[in-house]
Amino acid sequence: MVSVPDGRLLVLGDDPTGSIDSRHYGYLSGAGVLGVVIRRLPAATQRANWKDS
Image 1: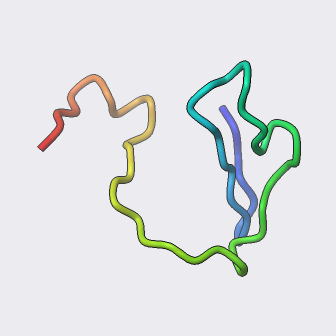
Image 2 (image 1 turned 90 degrees about the vertical axis):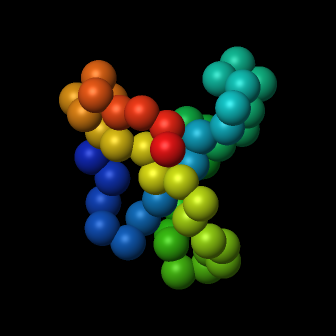
């Protein structure tokens, strides 16, 4: 499990072997990020009962 500090973001690409993301750069500051959340996935412990709506 990963704990992300308050005010920081963990950004992961869709290609684990080819993406340059937080695994290389570390956590990002949320202050400079512009965007809209379109989907938030539940924690792994809650996914067993999760269905796409």
